[in-house]
Length: 165
Image (cartoon, rainbow, N blue to C red; front, top):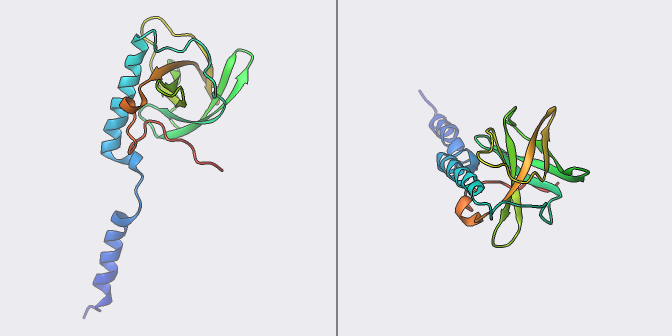
């Protein structure tokens, strides 16, 4: 004869994953938002006025970074003799071809993070601001001003900022 506790325990085991806090980055809705946002960012490369011609103020320290099609990571950015040097810490860094884009909010001039793509830049390459590295691999680092509200949803941010500490 089953004990009255067994159904309760089974119900708790079944429901516990549903009640656990979920990472929205792994949801289908956020996946679509990331694809759409990344595609919109790439479109800014066709606008010469959006391209950064020099390293923006505030481009040092630890920034959020994302390889398109992968989860969030971070980039540690320092000034170097040939522009900024950004070391990516995360998954999916492309081998050749590939490049990184420093994303700057066009309304506030705030650096929002680095988006990393595994393709070549189409058309005329932008001004190279520095180099993005991951282990032995490296890629050029460019910059672009974007309308942040149109490429990133607050519920599914295109680039998640790393936690302090």
